Length: 256
Image (cartoon, rainbow, N blue to C red; front, side, top):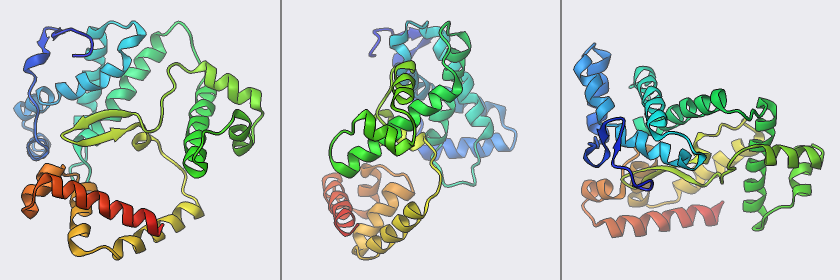
């Protein structure tokens, strides 16, 4: 463990169980039918997920037991609100719920308060920074970010300095057997003509892939399977899946 602690809230973290996605879905179906024991099993089977999330907050001097308990509240809320009819992995849905619960706790009990509007400006500036970096292949200046946001430079600077531990949109927050969830996966964005056109271009690029490449991308990014699971399903090695996946993604990038 990154924080050299084996036991949190009386739970031996070295013995925490990890459920497969299929097992999670089966338990969620039973919970939907009123099976309370299934609910307990799903909570216990996702405590490692809670543990993974709270590692992002360990450098703030907070009590780990408290963070773990708050994270478990977020997990329970995720279980109670998860829609089994949606094609979404449970961990993808649960991580932001757990993080949100912890952030609310830190916000409510933090002696230094930052206004909601200030935080919104800061996180928007971070998003603009990532977009400009990807577009121009270099990190933008504060002036460029402020111009893109149509906002005075000093306001952007103050907002970025006000938030604690600004993070990259590409920072991993959880990894489940190779399926990594990044900060950018949890940030919503308004629909624009540019993103709509980009989606059309992406679909056209995918059409030009061969059947095996299409199958791999579908299994990996739409069905949420790991490379190992994809390899077992189509009968090739994990290394071949990785190579074909990268090749397919490069073809799409070249066409876009």
